[in-house]
Length: 136
Image (cartoon, rainbow, N blue to C red; front, top):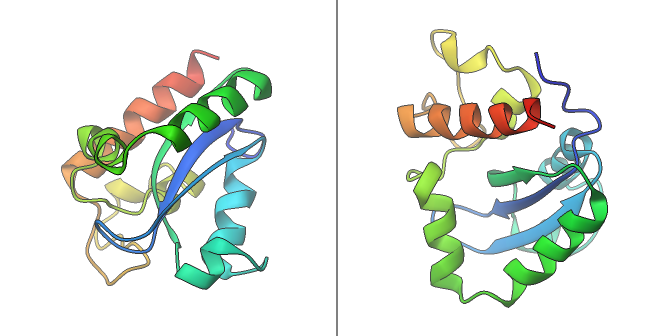
């Protein structure tokens, strides 16, 4: 099992599919995504309802992750959308499986936005991210 507590990552949160996007970087993805989802901290994601973790990219170094975040923030929106949809075409919320990697295998698993189980593409996106984290 991959430890996500100290996972260094660049990530994108969204308000909904094709909604408002937020790009961030953290040295603890599990906790930071939880903060966004619960509105624990004031700011952009709370104001615009960006509670869905739709993409993340693990890194070995926070310095490299910060460089990647800055680069992504300069990208046009359609490039960001393509990056998300390459691995997560339905913009599934990746947070539940990040917290509990067995969740997609459980019958009736749900994501925060309304009771649908993670799509096959969402599960594939999680597997890719988890495999990348294992290579760290």
